[in-house]
Length: 401
Image (cartoon, rainbow, N blue to C red; front, side, top):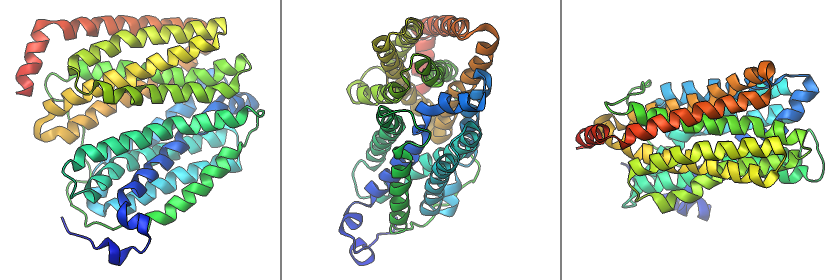
């Protein structure tokens, strides 16, 4: 790895000393854009006369933009370099914010969500790798990079929705002030990224298909189930709170989903990973049930509690435990195995939420939610027994040796 004289190349002191924090801030900007308009989803949809099913296309657009980039273009920054790919990802996220600011309706939102997905798909892997290479002299560069990426993306995914929600307490508006503020700081961040070192590309394959090692199927299904609950909660919260005249609180709920899991991670890292997954499978149907009851009864505190529990399960226990095991099972194909794990997770996050929207149009939102609760509960119970079985525990232990 080549050494760089930051003193000579970068006169700005903070960039010279902490270039990795500039990249981490770029991840923050990308993820802030993803959910900044989330509290207004139903407002935009109602103004355009969209049904629940049609509104769910907003979520599909994000997955369509993100998954191909994340899964199949994971090697792009290896070939072209971290800096240009990461700059492109920030530009894509910024373009999404420009689109929804210029035309605040559901049609523009679908295009904006696509570009948000592209930004996340390109930026997450490139940004984390960029941080790791900038910290090459740090004794724990990889774990330090992963920790920074996790922290800043969690702040972004939750912070965008929360900021807009707080702004909406002043009254519902199609273009909240948070859009303009995000555009401003994204422009500043975009300029700062050009001051970072353009590290030499490492080379490698452009397309790296996901890999599913032996014994990983239940682990991948578990993250799919937990993230499905999260995707459905994120999809229904703006609509249900709008019915209760509580649109401004959608941002708080969405922040809790993301931040609860991020908060618990440092405290459970040393737990048995299989035990963490089982804890997530216990919590996710319980949290989803609380969200349903809160929406039906109009109890905001119960909705807030339910979203927090779902976040703990999906982004805390199940994610951390599953990622630990997948990393061990992957062996030399660790990166591809993690891509497979994330692929199933994002499929779970996106597709059930889209299906729920159309089910709600035909059977009513209440019936659709109870159907989802039944499926999540049944799948969680089945997986809980699979993970508790002696045969599976022995097979996992053998595979990880």
